[in-house]
Structures are given as C-alpha cells and as structure tokens.
Image 1: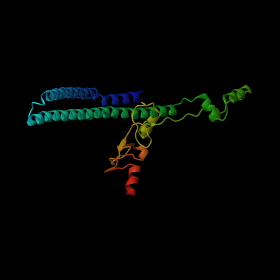
Image 2: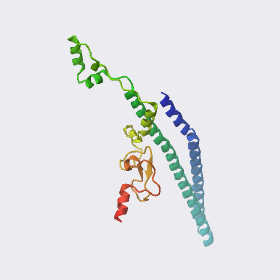
Image 3: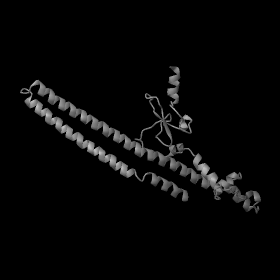
Image 4: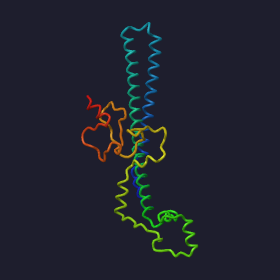
Length: 240
C-alpha cells in the first residue's frame, strides 16, 4: 500500500498544473474561433459591397476592396493554423501524462507481483505439484497412516530485501503496458504498431512513415547523441 500511495502521490504532483494549462489552451482556441468568425463576417460584408458597387467603382477602388478581402482571408488562415498548433500541443500535453501513467502502472504491477512471489503464502495445489503428486494422492497417503516427512513441508521463499525490490521495479520495462486495454481510436507508432508508452524516440528522417519508436523496439536504453535514424531509414540511407 505504501508503494501505491507513493506512485499516486508522484502522479498527482505531475498533473497538478494540467487543468490550468488545458483551460488556458481551450480559452485561446475559443478566442481564435471568435476572431475567425469576425473576419468571416468582414469578408461577407466586403464581398457584398464589392458586388453591389462594382460597376460604379474605379479600378483602384476595386483593387483596394479585393486586397482587403485577401488580407481578411490570410488572417483567417493564420488563426486556423494557430488553433491547429494549440490543439496538437494540448494533445501532446495529455498524451505525455498518459504515457507516464502507463509506465507507472506497469512498474506498480511488477511491484505487486514481486511481493506476492516473495511472500510466504503458496497455493496448496501448487505445493503438491512441486512435490510431484496431486491432492488426491496426498489424501490417499494420509489414509494409510503415513506420517508427513520433512520433505513434505512447504518451502518458504526468502523475501527480497528492499534494495532488491527497488532494483526489480526500476528494471521493469514500460512495454509491460501492452497487456493493458487501450483506446481503439488512439494512434499507433513504432515497428510493433502499438500505442505510445514509456520512453520514445523520433526518427530524424522527415520522410519517415512511422516517425516515433519505443526504446525497447529499437534496442535503446538511453537517448543517443546527435541525429538518430530508425532501422528502415538507416538501411535506405546506406543504399543511397
């Protein structure tokens, strides 16, 4: 329970500012939407003015109104691009915390599994299988008045020390989260075609069809220095 509380405390600390950051981004997107709507109304007004007075306008006045319409369209595109960037930033912000939660859950499950394996409790069926007989065999041997020997005593596993337990937790790779249910709409990456989790690295080839890879899938433990190319792009580069 102490480990669970520690994981939870660290995760809650990491997402403490997330609601405020999301609220700020959503507010900015709403403001960009409003600016775009204002510009669209301005374009409609200029277009109606141009159509109704085009025959009476001089060539310079026509060019001036058309230039205003063009500038308004350019502003609309800028606002739209800014909104797309904000949306991508918001998605990456949430996705980063999801990847961390997946990795923490994997380590926490490994922690629980390690504690269960190191505990004194063993299933009676497991004990009998280890000694090479079924529960029925054990019952029949007792019926003949057989006295249990020292070999029949369950073997207790020595619990791991805290330092060994910590090493086990840290050595667990986040790829264990692949066994967890995922959102079918979540995008997939890497050579394994799985969702994002744990540490990932991006291929420096701008034309790479996959772009992002899990450390374990490309035999990495730390981020390499300089540019890094995935196995496929590295092979294509050698051919050239």
